[in-house]
Every structure is written in structure tokens, then in C-alpha cells.
Amino acid sequence: MAKPYDLRHYPGFLGVTLLCLLILYAPLGVVAVYSFNGSQSITIWEGFSLRWYVDVFTGPESAKFKQAAWNSFIIAIVAATIATSIATLAATAVLRAGKFRMRTLSIGLISLPLMVPEIVTAVATLIFFNAIAFERGLMTILLAHIAFCIPFAYMPISARMQGIEASYEQAAMDLYATRRQAFTRILLPLMMPGIVSGFILAFIISLDDFIITNFVKGAGVETLPTAIFGAVKQGIKPNIMAISTMLLAVSIVMVTLSWLIGRKDQKNLIQQRKKK
Image 1 (cartoon, helix red, strand yellow):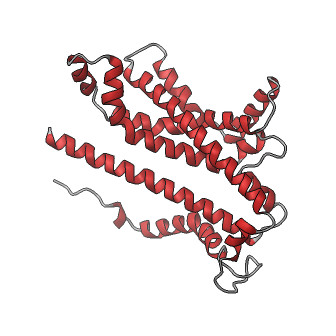
Image 2 (cartoon, rainbow, N blue to C red):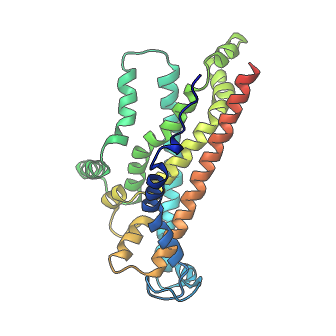
Image 3 (tube, rainbow, N blue to C red):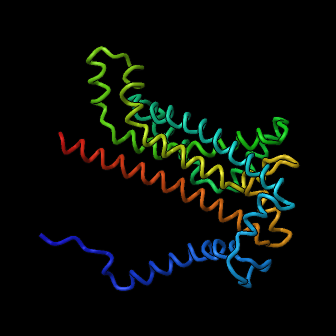
């Protein structure tokens, strides 16, 4: 039997990989390093310092950034919670309701926002709010974030549900459990790793969004990405690098947490299959 081909030994694979990593992460590395620069210049290194991180919390622009960060985190938490709940119900309806006429269309409609350019979604959302005379502010940002976060939460939840055999619920109902009890006591706990991953993904997408937020926010309302953009238009300052680095750190922590949950869940599934 032939051994599986190892792509790592393909000529040029290492070089292409290093080039891609350089293009992706070198700018982030530069921002992170220079956020610890003691100089006011963003290009001249004058030694390690935390002055710009202190400036974010105590400087003249600290109140603006604190309010923007508060808005971002509140919107991201609420939007991710509601989007994850809707995505869980949608996945249950699509994958556990059996075959129905609009099943394929329903899956396509849920996934469509992932393929539509974000600028198109932003313009369409803005036109919709203007058409119904909905005053723009935090609520319009929240509603827009809930809408476009649903597909991102749906992906890991549906993937997790597809890996759960229907026999678990059938066995529960054979033991006189109702459909609701089979869902809440059997299916929902098994789905929890996917639900948590979906929540984390939706949270990160909402927290980092700029384009849609910039279109639907009202005057005087800022989230962290829009506040950073507004500050950058006046010139890139070292404190902007510090804020960007902290935002990047939050994203890395959340993505790592999601990966660890998925990895642990995968190991549990493998162990369960071995026991069978």
C-alpha cells in the first residue's frame, strides 16, 4: 500500500508558507512592537515603554476610547447571544426536523450573508433603516450585528449537530422522554461545544466589525473600530497602536479558546466512537 503523500516535502512548499505568514502577520507584529515604543514617532524606536498603554486609559482621549470600548463590548455580547440563540434554533429546525420542501433554500438563505460583500450588506441595511424611519444609534448597530452574526454562529453549531447521531434522541424518546426533554437534556448538552464556538465567533465578528457599523451608527455614537478609524484620519499615533494591540490580543484569546473547545470536543467524539 502506497504511503500518503506528505505535502510538506513538495518543492517550494516551505517558501510559499513562510511568504504567506510574513504577509499576514508582519504588519500585526510591527503594530504590536511599536505600541511599546517610548517615542512619539511611529517609526523611530527609542526604547521599551508602556506610556501609550497608560495614555489609552488616562490620556486626553481616554474618555472617548473607554466609551467606544464599552459600546463595542456590550453590542458584541448582546448580538452574539441573540445570534447564537437564533442560530441554534435554525440548526435544530433544519437538521432535526426531517425533510421538508424549503430545507435546501433555508440553508442557502442562512449562508447567503457570508458570500455577500459586506459593503452591499451595509448599504442595504442603511437603506432599510432609512425606509422605515428608524433613528440611527446603538440600537441600529445592535440589530445589524445580530443579523450578520447569525450565519457565523450557525456554522459551528450546525457542524456540531451533524456529528451527533439522531439515535441519542430516539433512545431518550424510547424511554418516554418528550421531544422537548430529549432536546434540552440530550441534544442541547451535546451541542454545547458548538454553541460556545458559535458564540465566540459571533462575538469576534461583532467586536471587530467596521464597515456595517460605520454605515448604520448615528451621529456621536462610536464603537472601538470606528473610533480608531476616526483617530487615524487625523494621523497615526502610538496610542492607536496600543489600542489595536489590545484589540488584537482579545481576538487571539477568543479564537484560541474556540480552538481549544473544538479540539477537546473532537477528542471526546473519537473516544466515544472507540467505545462503540
